[in-house]
Length: 239
Image 1 (cartoon, rainbow, N blue to C red):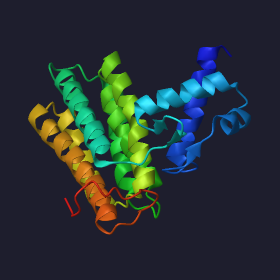
Image 2 (image 1 turned 180 degrees about the vertical axis):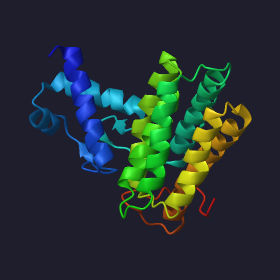
Image 3 (image 1 turned 30 degrees about the horizontal axis):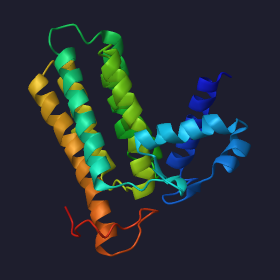
C-alpha cells in the first residue's frame, strides 16, 4: 500500500474498533501498539489519529498522546443538524419534479420500509438500526448528488458511535417503523414534499432528543453510562 492508503486503512480500522466498543472513551491509543496491531508503519498511524481527531473520534493532547473521545451533546447536535439539513436537500431534489425518483429506487425504499416493520418484531434491535440507517442512506443515494451522498455517508459512522457509546434502547420499534419509515416512504412515493419534510424532521428530532436525554442522565447522576464519562461542566437534567 502507498502511505496514503496505509493511513486510510489505519483510520478505518481504528474507527471500526471505536464504533464496535473495542476502544472505549478515555482509552489511550498508543502508536506503537497500533502499528503492531495493524501491521503498518508508525507514520500512517500518526496521520490516521490526526484524521480521526478531525472527525471527533479521537482527542489529541500535547505530551499526552491520543485517546478515544467521549460523546458529548455538542457533537450529537452538530451531526444531527447536518444530517437533517442534507436530508432536506435530498427531499427537495427528489420531489422537485415528477419521475425524478425512479422506480428502481422506489422499489429499494419500499423493501427497506417493509423490513423496518418486520425487524421491529425481532428480539434484537441490531437489524432495526442497520435497516434504518440503510433506509436513510437509500434516500440520499437516490439523488445522485455526490457531495450530499458523501457527507451524509461519512456522518453515519458518528451515528453508529453514538448508539454504541450511549447504549440507546428503542422501546417502540414497531411504532417508529410505521411513523418514521413507512409513512416517509409513502410520502416519497406519492410526491408529497411537505409531509416528507415533516416526517424527516420529526424523525431526526426524536433521535436527537433520545441521545441528549441519555447524555443528560449520565451527567446528572455523576456516573458514566455505557462508557460515557460525566462532564461536570454541563448542566444536569433531562431534555
